[in-house]
Image: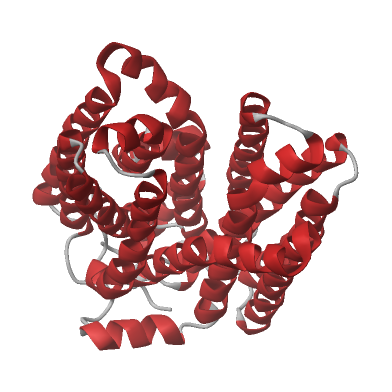
Length: 423
């Protein structure tokens, strides 16, 4: 493509609205949404699943945790491969793995659930970064690429919030097994769609290859030496640790401090999910018009500082309205941090987005595994004050890491720079 045609493509991308961006990456949004459904079915129907498996709730809950470990291991191991193979093929393969996991889950035995959790964790560790990188590489303008990636993450947030009630209705007709079978069918259909685009040729829905071929270790090294990338990956891991830590104990906090039972707490959970979605969606939208990566990192730093105070307020709030406000503020601030990390990583990793986003996903999996541990340690040491303080310290470290990223990141990105272009 000539410089003139490349510039035209870039200017065309700049003019795209959110709706037009979403229309271009619709199959990718569907794929990332499907990736969240298997574990949602498992969590939503855990009581019935535990009873039919003949095992105890502690064991079945522990199996869910093995999925996070599998996601961490597979995410780290496979991250560099996402820049060496067709991301469309990788995403289709991940969806096929999720479909297989769902079919195994239908069997209902403890061993089938064990394999289910491992396969779902491994599949999503490949699916999410591959889809995010594909969405970003669909556009030449870096601001639009970042917006496409944040649309993927916002879709995942919305799915996490809506999947449980949407799955409950069909389950009244065909049970949780029917939900798993339907998910498997949709996953296979979406995989076929992504594979068809991949076979048609690169550049439509698949990734743009790196600017220069790199080996496995070299790919990790290149990603790790990109300015600001290591600090942002640390921000992502710490932010996820703090946010997932408070989610692990949120229901207990509301019950013990304000006598909010499971039925009413579902509204609190919806409040948190809605605030996160809105923060992620509108934060990503605002960042599209912010060309300076340094300023974006400072925004993440400020949002993390807000989150530091908010998580303390959640655990120490004297009355229910304060706790509700703090819960919404905490979710929104974390969502802004997540949007900044995704946007800046996409802009900073042209040609190596698969590797960088794969490492980001692995860091988030690590955060999921660490969150409840950190909060639990604080709770054991000093009650709810200890849990809030421990998570606040983790969030503060995320703010410091974001400030460090701002110190090494450059100024405004050049419009039109694309994957594989000159850094």
